[in-house]
Amino acid sequence: MSIPESLSALTTIRDFIRWGSSEFRRHNLSFGHGFGSALDEARYLTLHALDLPYDWPESYFAAVLTEAERQQVIEILQLRFNSRQPAAYITHESWFCGLDFYVDERVLVPRSPIAELIANQFEPWVDSGQVHRILDLCTGSGCIAIAAQYAMHDAIVCASDLSRDALEVAAINCKKHEVSDHITLYQSDLFDAIPKQKFDVIVSNPPYIAADDPHLSQGDVRFEPARALVAGSDGLADLRIIISEAPAYLQAGGALMVEHGYDQKQAVSQLFKKSQFVDVSCYQDLAGQDRITIGVKP
Image 1 (cartoon, rainbow, N blue to C red):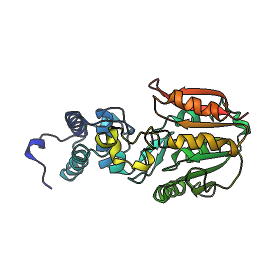
Image 2 (cartoon, one colour):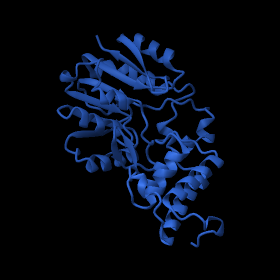
Image 3 (cartoon, rainbow, N blue to C red):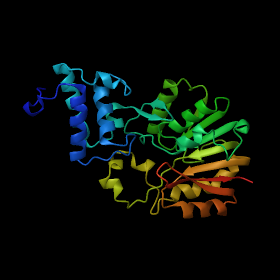
Image 4 (cartoon, one colour):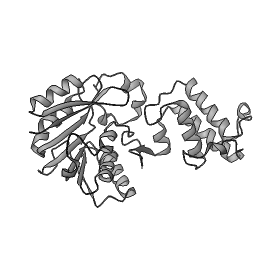
């Protein structure tokens, strides 16, 4: 590929970050898959194309690129704004709880506020010193289960997903983080194929988008697996099952923590109360939206 004449003036790392940022904004890309702005994502993709880490010192941004390097950067930036694919699917990497994960189109791009609960070892809803068994339902890439294993390395962690494809990605990440011997993966439609046992924490980022939500066809989530997003006509189909069946898999005093849509707080809280959970509360994400409901089994 020859470099277009219109881009011949771009020579340094800084030039390409600036150009990529401008093009991302011009193409009206959204940035809900790990990077908060056009500038951050342009920086990430430019450095990735050069096989450099995201935290590469800015003092090197004036470095002039070779023609081959310039072509590599142009290709990856153009792929992002022409295809509109999330950057994580282009580079096959994403971060969750400060950990690097392999991702592809078989799984959602990790971005759950559950990361904040893991960082606090699920306190104050449970005593972290008494958490011995954790279940991650709808694990996808395995990021929640693996991050929980890092945070609470003495706990036994299990993870499940209906999708065999997703479990293949989770297995890749378990191997990547050397926790294959510490995390048990189940192919299961929610609780159906999970052997009866008691957990201290059950955590889940299940499908919770309504089938007719326009974002499924118009937004960037259209690139992600629909079964990991859609849950019936109101988005609550899987949440109803999880909340109603979780008590049979929880120790007394154990907690269920489920992510949901920002406008589903009231409906989900009612489901928790219907299933006799106590101390039901809602956790807000960094944007101040009600995104995780938590209840304790009495």
